[in-house]
Amino acid sequence: MAGATRSNSATRVSRPLLGLSLAVYLFLYIPLIVVIVYSFNASRVQSGEWGGFTLDWYNKLLHNETLLNATLNSLIIGVAAAAIATVLGTLAGLALHRYKLRLLPVLVLAPVAIPEILQAVSLVLFFNAINLTLGMVSIILSHVAFCISFVAIVVRSRLQGMDESLTEAARDLGATPWQAFRMVTLPLIMPGIIAGALMAFTLSIDDFVITFFTSGPDAATLPLQIYSMIKVVVTPEVNAVSTLLMLLTLILIIIANKIAPSALQAK
Image (tube, rainbow, N blue to C red):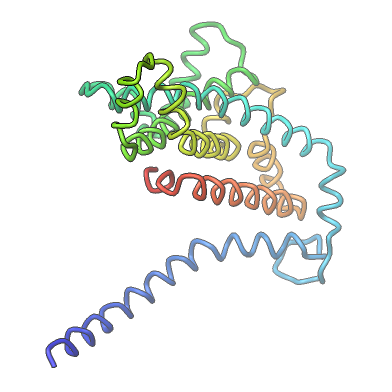
């Protein structure tokens, strides 16, 4: 009888929580669904009127050189930043795991907690101080600066779940520290490294605030180009490219979660 009472009480508590959770998810995802739906709207005027289903805006998007160049810039920056951040972030994750220094986690993980606007301003001041012209290079360096921390978090979480006795066994069998790392540690943490690289690429290609401050006149990325377009009017091409960007981001997140399920939880 007491068990049934507790079960009914839990049911009464869970229903309001379920309703609240559903409302939150609807609030988060309905705007995204609206963008996707309107990318197939035949009406050019985005006033809420449905003009029929069409794929014309995706076809026009493929012939829009401005958007295509911005997309190419974003891909180049994303790949370069992810590659550099993955190498440095992996080293940082190894350092966090092996060396229990109090200051080290603060130095490595601070970019995650620092507001983007503050980081953007500090990067601009730094580039001005070293006389670096703002452009593709400055954007890549800026993205590397904040992506390293995310890669380090993922790699460290992977290392924490690794059996250290395997490395010790390799050393006992005569392997050098480098051989033990290359043949034992590296293969075991590779899923975390790949997940961190995918996460860094996603963060880089989606970034707006830091890119806005550190980009030059000839280095427009896709988020910056979309922003410049929607300041005038939200055209169907913007809805189409936003839909494709959301799809790419979702695919990368799914891949990262499949490769290393703890990656997104660590973030």
